[in-house]
Image (cartoon, rainbow, N blue to C red; front, side, top):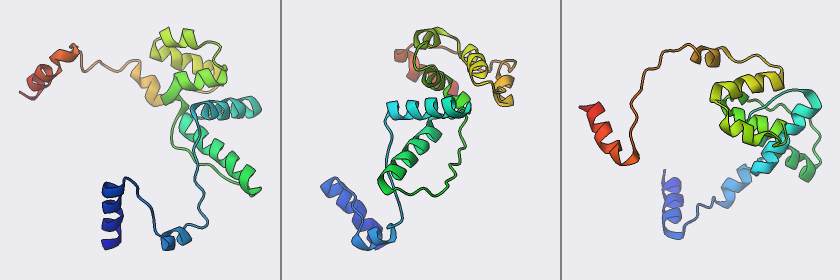
Length: 159
């Protein structure tokens, strides 16, 4: 579309992509914001502290932004935040948030599956089956190389 092309040309030329007033009018009901890493960790910790429920960082960003929205708009409408990510995908970050960083040095040295076990115990939740299956899955790739050997190693795989 011509309008999209013009916006992209402006981005390339001026370094910014600015929507038109007509587009802004269409977005009058839209709210956007962000959450810092600390705000994200705080959202994970607060929900866990208040309810015992553990969320992942992506969901925590949504929760933190929703909090900002409520503060700015005074809108108290009941809201559902839907999540598709698992806290077990971000185990260390979630544990650090729940533990308020107390055990971060321990988590840095803990093997990944031990981190998963620790999160399961902290959160009192079952480990997802897909993650449990990793424990007994066969190792398919064992090749290791230094950075300077990567091009040669990739070429060997591609033959």
